[in-house]
Length: 123
Image (tube, rainbow, N blue to C red; front, side, top):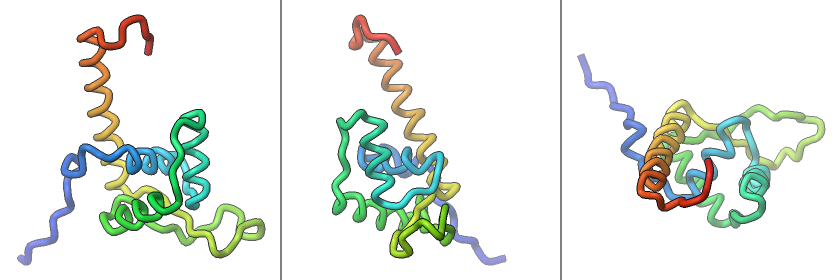
Protein backbone atom coordinates (compact mmCIF):
# COMPACT_ATOMS: atom_id res chain seq x y z
CA UNK A 1 0.00 0.00 0.00
CA UNK A 2 1.53 3.38 -1.00
CA UNK A 3 2.36 5.87 1.68
CA UNK A 4 -0.07 8.74 1.88
CA UNK A 5 1.40 12.19 2.35
CA UNK A 6 1.29 13.07 6.03
CA UNK A 7 -0.60 16.16 7.09
CA UNK A 8 1.49 18.43 9.28
CA UNK A 9 0.61 18.59 12.94
CA UNK A 10 -0.73 21.94 14.09
CA UNK A 11 2.08 22.24 16.63
CA UNK A 12 4.71 22.29 13.88
CA UNK A 13 3.54 25.82 12.97
CA UNK A 14 3.86 27.16 16.51
CA UNK A 15 4.82 29.80 17.55
CA UNK A 16 3.04 32.05 15.08
CA UNK A 17 4.02 35.58 14.25
CA UNK A 18 1.59 38.21 15.55
CA UNK A 19 0.50 39.03 11.98
CA UNK A 20 -0.31 35.40 11.19
CA UNK A 21 -2.19 34.90 14.47
CA UNK A 22 -4.17 38.10 13.86
CA UNK A 23 -5.16 36.85 10.40
CA UNK A 24 -6.19 33.42 11.70
CA UNK A 25 -8.22 35.05 14.48
CA UNK A 26 -9.94 37.36 12.00
CA UNK A 27 -10.95 34.33 9.91
CA UNK A 28 -11.93 32.12 12.84
CA UNK A 29 -15.58 33.16 12.85
CA UNK A 30 -16.25 34.26 9.27
CA UNK A 31 -14.93 34.43 5.74
CA UNK A 32 -13.42 37.81 4.93
CA UNK A 33 -11.72 39.63 2.08
CA UNK A 34 -8.36 41.32 2.66
CA UNK A 35 -9.72 44.71 3.62
CA UNK A 36 -12.25 43.01 5.92
CA UNK A 37 -9.37 41.21 7.66
CA UNK A 38 -7.57 44.52 8.17
CA UNK A 39 -10.74 46.11 9.59
CA UNK A 40 -11.39 43.18 11.95
CA UNK A 41 -7.83 43.25 13.32
CA UNK A 42 -8.02 47.00 13.86
CA UNK A 43 -11.48 46.76 15.49
CA UNK A 44 -10.50 43.91 17.79
CA UNK A 45 -7.37 45.75 18.97
CA UNK A 46 -9.12 49.13 19.32
CA UNK A 47 -6.85 50.46 16.57
CA UNK A 48 -3.61 49.40 18.28
CA UNK A 49 -2.79 46.88 15.53
CA UNK A 50 -2.93 47.85 11.88
CA UNK A 51 -2.08 45.38 9.15
CA UNK A 52 -0.51 46.91 6.07
CA UNK A 53 -1.73 45.57 2.71
CA UNK A 54 1.72 44.32 1.66
CA UNK A 55 2.34 42.31 4.80
CA UNK A 56 -1.27 41.05 4.83
CA UNK A 57 -1.22 39.72 1.28
CA UNK A 58 2.27 38.21 1.60
CA UNK A 59 1.11 36.42 4.75
CA UNK A 60 -2.14 35.29 3.09
CA UNK A 61 -0.23 33.85 0.12
CA UNK A 62 2.02 31.90 2.50
CA UNK A 63 -0.97 30.72 4.58
CA UNK A 64 -2.73 29.48 1.43
CA UNK A 65 0.43 27.66 0.37
CA UNK A 66 0.70 26.07 3.83
CA UNK A 67 -2.98 24.98 3.69
CA UNK A 68 -3.96 27.04 6.74
CA UNK A 69 -6.22 29.36 4.72
CA UNK A 70 -8.03 28.88 1.44
CA UNK A 71 -9.74 31.16 -1.01
CA UNK A 72 -13.49 30.90 -1.02
CA UNK A 73 -15.55 30.77 -4.20
CA UNK A 74 -18.64 31.86 -2.30
CA UNK A 75 -19.69 35.48 -1.99
CA UNK A 76 -21.65 36.67 1.06
CA UNK A 77 -23.77 39.06 -1.05
CA UNK A 78 -22.82 38.66 -4.71
CA UNK A 79 -25.10 41.46 -5.87
CA UNK A 80 -23.53 43.95 -3.42
CA UNK A 81 -19.94 42.78 -3.68
CA UNK A 82 -17.01 43.75 -5.89
CA UNK A 83 -16.23 40.67 -7.97
CA UNK A 84 -12.49 41.42 -7.78
CA UNK A 85 -12.41 40.77 -4.05
CA UNK A 86 -10.98 37.50 -2.90
CA UNK A 87 -12.50 35.97 0.20
CA UNK A 88 -10.53 33.75 2.56
CA UNK A 89 -11.47 31.19 5.18
CA UNK A 90 -9.65 28.91 7.58
CA UNK A 91 -9.03 25.33 6.60
CA UNK A 92 -9.48 22.61 9.24
CA UNK A 93 -5.68 22.67 9.72
CA UNK A 94 -5.78 26.46 10.07
CA UNK A 95 -8.39 26.15 12.81
CA UNK A 96 -6.23 23.61 14.64
CA UNK A 97 -3.17 25.85 14.35
CA UNK A 98 -5.11 28.86 15.68
CA UNK A 99 -6.32 26.77 18.62
CA UNK A 100 -2.82 25.45 19.33
CA UNK A 101 -1.39 28.98 19.34
CA UNK A 102 -4.20 30.23 21.61
CA UNK A 103 -3.42 27.39 24.06
CA UNK A 104 0.28 28.29 23.95
CA UNK A 105 -0.45 31.95 24.64
CA UNK A 106 -2.89 31.06 27.44
CA UNK A 107 -0.11 29.01 29.05
CA UNK A 108 2.26 31.97 28.84
CA UNK A 109 -0.39 34.20 30.40
CA UNK A 110 -0.86 31.71 33.26
CA UNK A 111 2.89 31.70 33.82
CA UNK A 112 3.01 35.52 33.80
CA UNK A 113 0.23 35.64 36.39
CA UNK A 114 1.95 33.03 38.55
CA UNK A 115 5.15 35.09 38.43
CA UNK A 116 3.08 38.16 39.32
CA UNK A 117 4.18 39.95 36.17
CA UNK A 118 0.62 41.23 35.80
CA UNK A 119 0.31 42.76 39.24
CA UNK A 120 -3.05 44.40 39.79
CA UNK A 121 -4.42 43.37 36.39
CA UNK A 122 -7.44 41.13 36.05
CA UNK A 123 -8.26 38.79 33.19
